Amino acid sequence: MRYRTLGRTGLQVSEVSLGTEYLMDKSREHIVEVIHAAIEAGINYFDLFGAAPAFRDAMGAAFAGRREDVYLAAHLGAAVTAEGQYLKTRSLKVCETFFDDFLARYATDYTDVLVLHNCDRQNDFDALFREDGPLGLALRLKEAGQTRFIGYSGHTIETALQAVESGVIDVLMFPVNMAGNAVPGKKDLLKTCLARGVGVVAMKPLGGGKLLQGPRTVRMAHYQMGGEAQKLTKHTPITPVQCLHYTLSQVGVCAAIPGCASVEELRGVLAYEDATEAERDFSDVITDFAQYTPGECVYCNHCLPCPAQIDIGQTLRLFDMAQQDFTPALRAAYDAMPTHASDCTACGACEKRCPFGVSTVARIAEVAAFF
Image (tube, one colour):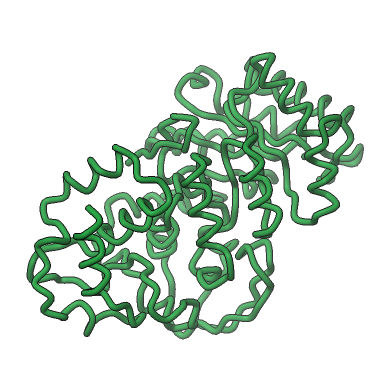
C-alpha cells in the first residue's frame, strides 16, 4: 500500500481507502471480516456515514483494539429515523445526538475527520454553514478536541467550491471518476483544493459500480459523477484497476474510497497496488465514451514509451500541480525523477500515440523552462 498526505491535515492516508456504504446491510461477522481484511492490507482511512445502531455496533467491534491504526471519518448530518431509515438532517440537536452516539458505539473520544454531510444546493449550503448551524457545531467540537479536522461532502461544483474557499474545511469528499472527466469546472475545483491545502478524498471512483458493468449504455446520476446526469455508452469493459488509476492520477486527489461489499470486491480494488502499467492504462476506455477535452492531458501515459525515458504523465501532473502551489515537496518530487523534461529530444513520438491530441512536445518544453 502506498500513502499520500491528506492536504494540510498532514495525515498519511492509504491511497486506496474504503467507503463503507455497501456494508450497511451486512451481518456483524461479515462487516468485521471485511474491515479486518482492509486493515491487514494497509488501508487506514475509513468513511463512516452510516448511523444505524446495529451497523455502528458492528463497526465498533471491527475497529476494537485498532483505533490507533486507523483514521475514522464521521458525518455530521447523517442520521436514521425511528424506523431505521437513512435521514439527512440539519437539526443541531439531532446532529449532536448522532455524533455522541458515534463516539459511544465506536468506543473513541474523537473522530479524525468530521464531515459536513451531503450538501448540493445553495439553500442547504447556507443553512449548513451558519454559525448557529452544523458548521458552528463542528467548529465547537474541533475546539473541544472531539474531532481533529473538518470535512465536507457534496456532488456539485458550485457548493463544493464555496466550501473549499471558505477556509474552514480541511478535507473535501467529491466524486472523481472518468465518467466525470469532462464535467465543467471539475479540474479547477481540484486545483483550488491543492492550492488551499484541502485534501481530496475521491468518492465514487467506480461510478457507483456502473463503470464496471459490461459494454452498454448507462445513465450516470449527478451524484455519481459530480456534474449533470447523462447517458454514457461503453463499448469495452472497464476494470476497477483502470478506474482507480484514473482517479488517483488526478491533481489534488489524496485517496480514493471505493465501496466494497465483500472481501472479494476488496481484493478487486487492492489489485491496483500491484497492477502493471498496461493493466492500469485507461486511455482507450475514456476515449471510448468521449469523456475528455481535446488537447488536455489526463496523465494516462498512453504516450509512452519515450525514447528519452521521461515519465510524461507524472511530469505534466507535477507541472500542473506546481501552477497552483509550487511547494518544496513538488520541487523535490520533480528533482527525484530519473529523467526530466530537459531530456526531451522533441522527437514527437509521444504526440503520435496520444489519444487526446495533447501538444506534448510544447508542454514538456514549458515544464523544462519552469523547473
